[in-house]
Image 1 (tube, rainbow, N blue to C red):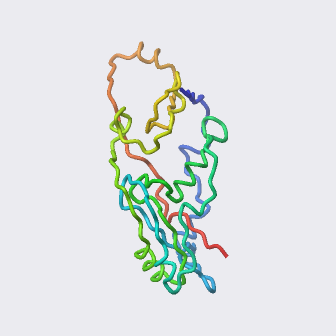
Image 2: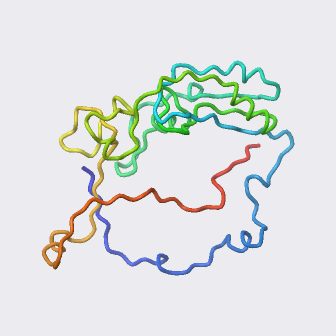
Image 3: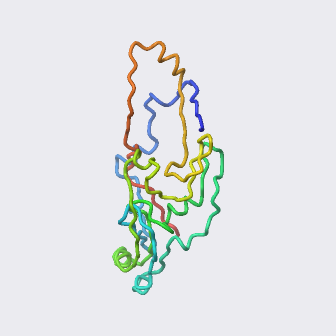
Amino acid sequence: MSTIIHPEKELKVVGTRPVRPDGVPKVTGRAQYGADFTLPGMLWGKILRSPHAHARIRSINTKKAEALPGVKAIITGADLPEQKFEYVGPERVAVNFWHLTRNILAREKALFEGHPIAAVAATSKEVADEALKLIEVDYEVLPHVIDVDEAMKDDAPLLFEDMIPRGVTPTPTKASNMSKRLEFKLGDVDKGFAEADEIVEASFKTKPVHQGYIEPQACLPR
């Protein structure tokens, strides 16, 4: 188990009202976004995504899509270089590039609804959209769960049949949907309980939080 203890420290920005350096261009309409840029001969990219939350990919056939006039390239996970299965970097933020490449484009399985399966580059948005319809994917739909507690049960369907949880002592010998266990501590919990007039114990769940940017990340390769 990895334990992370946050030290008490004075915060310099949190709680203040700093001036946003990009605020004026955005509120005046002068800021430029990805869709505002065009280049001569620019290609349009589109992503084919899995309609299934969990499915084995038996095959991907892109021949019909590649034959469509205006289609310049189609790639799948098989076109990405294979990465070694290992965790790189400090334990707290270790990265597994084997997992990352399969998150970019699915290989053996689609791991969530919307998982990218193939990417198309074409001369127009309309051609790219049509090419997506011509890509044939043979799926074997597998059982899935969408609840955290259900996913951690011993009999839950596994996304990765060989993923052993990290940060657990002793090291498990059975694969799990739990990638790693982290424990966060702040303050003296035992002292807090001892001094408390009332103690309430419960389990709490919250939705993922993400910043509300005006547009997602975008790029325009030359």
